[in-house]
Image (spheres, rainbow, N blue to C red):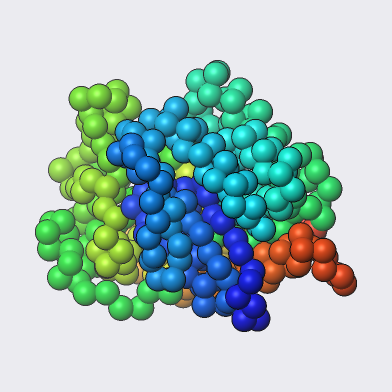
Length: 398
């Protein structure tokens, strides 16, 4: 790390910091202050629900630029992204990091302005079942626009990197996973308002969508009395969403729907004191909720796919469908020694591969090289962790 205060970076593609929405916001909440401590001049764009003039504020040494576009709708999010791009162009930003590619076609404006544009390409969003044909076409277009228009691409999983390498030279891609805290302490009394006790519940944290296997998990858990509870986090609206209603109708009395919880201390307590973490995501890269569960030493029961197998490896059991989920739950709840083995394996892997110090340092080094390249520096201008598709054992990706 160096302390060159002239290095400037703008971060966009999120609602803002501190985090109140999702994984990318949490990542930016970690990355932005870290870069400040490394000597960077950091700007983060923040979306506001009230229209008004652009304002600025300081948060932990990070310059926040607040742009009001009205209520949080898909169209207003596009307006916000465009306003961020225009602002960065006017300021002649040296380096822009965009988290996500959903409006990457608009980001071509950054390239036209000569601004180095780095894009975290997230998952293969257009392949998700939840999107209709128009949304899928828009996301597919932006997937290509991000690949071709970005100066450098970041992937959080080797399979995402391989997907991108089908479109661009693999030297244009750096593979850096998502990060997590290593949670070793959290007060159990924070669980009381949720109606669960330490060591007496399982946890499911996911958006309530079919591709996240929440129905299969809830139904499998509810197949018979368990003597423990299943704590489900997420925003369920059964009156407005038929799938949400289906999930809740499948739940036994031992299932607790706790809503969406963003308080880090409460979530840490939930992770640390749970018996088992259930992860049903079928698509995506390095899922934030999964690595956070590993950082708390949770044993994991995960959907069997190439994404989850690379992340958790031997720290998980895997299920393919409802019946295999029932069987795995029966066996794991009856085998505390196996759960302890999985817990140790997951915490060790989290420390070695996904802890925030490891991940953030990889980002800082990569961004430093890209900044130097944009500034016309000499020497090796290929970022580290680039072109490393072959470092992953093929068996992990089957």
